[in-house]
Image (cartoon, rainbow over all chains, first blue to last red; front, side, top):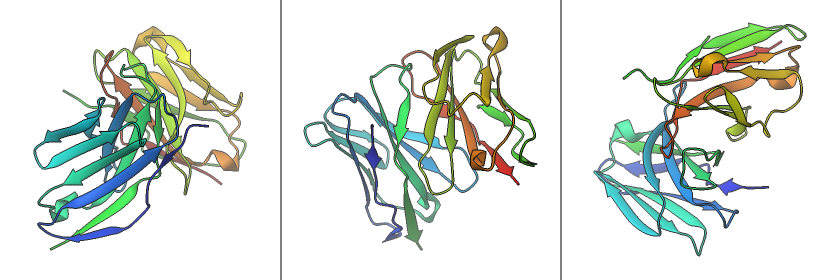
Length: 113
Length: 112
């Protein structure tokens, strides 16, 4: 049974701070890792994906992957109130579009003005 | 580019009735996925189409659920007869080969 674990939160940070969201996964064969942001009643929106160990940066977002520790994280710099949402970590079996995703329950992030 | 579109956004039916959910993927996306989130749980995979063919239906809960994708375009997911435990949010996602999945807003299904 593949599992993805996330702290449900809420994680509260002040505006302008760095928010750090974490995720662990059970299947050592996993190859693709995704972070989705979901506002209430809306679709999960892809914000980052990473396939290789290390860091990947895109604007204010940095995804970090450590396959040896089976650990994925998302850093959000200069957090804004509009970043307040639930962040879903998803893991795929391989790096292709054929891969089905296993999701965590999500971490709620609250950014206060 | 239009996103993944799902109809209806909400559906409330009684136990024993039939409901059909529809998903229109992003144009040109051969891969189409159905997922479901029941209250308090994580989003879970139901099945995967590649064009009109079922690639993986290992997540389908039982034979009351029937998914189709005629012509490799839109997909339907029928629940017949609906049971109380089928309540939840049903998400559809689509992707090009070797690309991440993009999700629709989901259909919130309530069984009374």
